[in-house]
Length: 231
Image 1 (cartoon, rainbow, N blue to C red):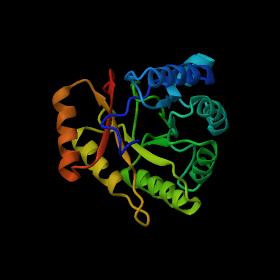
Image 2 (cartoon, rainbow, N blue to C red; image 1 turned 30 degrees about the vertical axis):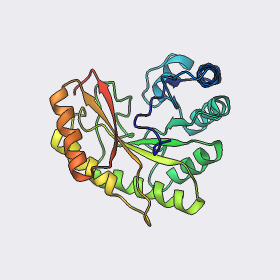
Image 3 (cartoon, rainbow, N blue to C red; image 1 turned 90 degrees about the horizontal axis):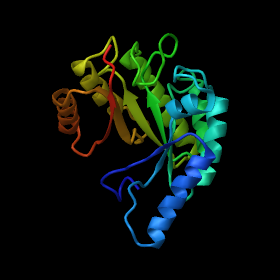
Image 4 (cartoon, helix red, strand yellow; image 1 turned 120 degrees about the vertical axis):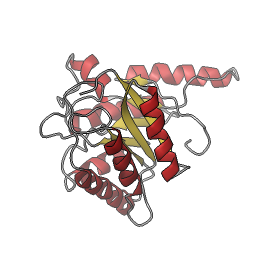
């Protein structure tokens, strides 16, 4: 899909019913030969936390909870591919191997891994109070994810996200360097497929980040999440 489409649009869902509704809209559009406004589905940590247990997205769900919900979302969404929130990996660079294996088993198409500090402030990118881990720690997690992906032969791809644009210990220069480093992380020819940034609502700053990323790699696939909160 990433090779076929110029833009991936994925409505966020938090349940199998939401996935079925999206699937039905998609299939009916195709049957009537009409354009559909989306081509994937996103199982959002924010949506799941808010809609299923009325809590903010601040680490209240663990790997077992999110993977169980995602499993039913994925089976209800076919043939639409599903992007699933992997938070900060649900562990260290060692233990996130289990996350990769489980996400592969349930059929995740694209997993997103973020660089927040899960020991202190982990929360949705739209919330204030965020801090990022050191770039070296995130790069180690990315490499670990890629290593396990290579070992198990999964078709699942990785989207890395930096929250440095809006984090208390970040900024535009920091976010630029993180983006380059994350996307250059390699394991036997395998690299992250998409780079995502949580961005403040200042177009000039966002445009500069996008420009710098495409200077580094003109073919880099980017995603932007507009955040109302700058720490």
